[in-house]
Image (tube, rainbow, N blue to C red; front, side, top):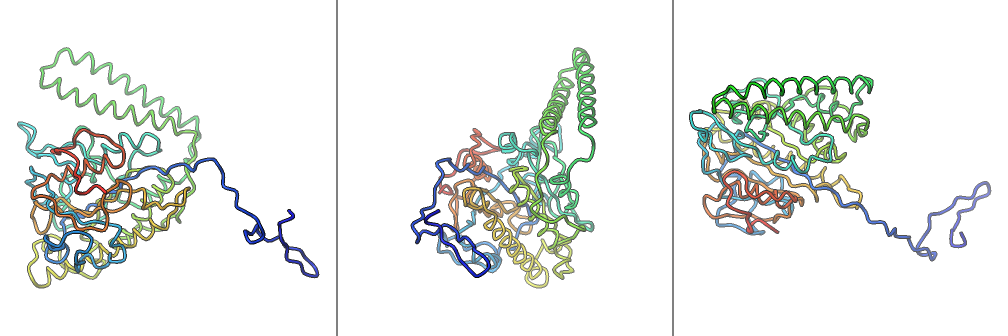
Length: 428
């Protein structure tokens, strides 16, 4: 107290903070600050981008590449993201599916006798390990397009960007109000009643498994394989129920953002969904987020009247102009997302951006081309090179990029999809 200074007036005395100039040295606690967890965020845009004005020149690589028109709104963040070219899925054969196989790399004809086949998406591989300590293993968001021209806005089949271990679609949510309440609103149902409901679900599962086990003895091998897939689904439900039980008595976090009052569309929806993803990661409600973005409503909200599919088949003129406008707006929104993630601070003083691996892209490059997939990597979560234009060898497996990101966030998967190994070219 002898080194504490005061401001004195005729009626009051106000203590000043401890000042170094007065001989005080700030005490630094010996207790270590908790290391912020790694996170992953995948933003899928369906129809790809405008090749001529979004991609840097393939020969102009490294940190000093010429920023293109489509990426110009991200110029202030040049050192925080990289553009990766020449990565694609070797089995891609669906020009209207910009998202269906984007995170899986599956061959749609890979199951004999079936016209459609998929495998687990990279976000769900990460969620199986990184989601153990959070209330929600992963968060799937969708755009709320209500007037799509065709093929689900260029995204293709699926209920979100996510696919489970059986290659089945994982449902996503297109209502930001519902997402907010799921993340932050307290459950008003009495605790005992919630426990009873979970117990009842468990008893139903037990009865189903008992009947299925007795049935299995009378089935052909094909039906046994089908039943095994069914059992896997049951086990997934059991895991979910067990997780819900473990969180029953733990209150949800206080929301760091205001409750949405409506369901916006287009550009306003994307802004709001980005805010919700930041809030979910910031409160450690989840560490894995995917967002299958709207296309039709985005075009409408920025004053474009051309339909998404028509825009995707652009040629010089109004269609190409609409595609280029769409690119600039998406880059603008991405820049705003970076700003907010950088401003969201962790306990150790770093930012949310520093610990998040963010991917922006599509299974398509441009128009309906399936090679050289649109790929932008950002954030410090996976330890990849940032601030560069990276041209990989032609026909590099996009799943090699996904495997590299998994290893970067600490998920040591042996392989993913048709991957052949991690890419040292993109590792920092």
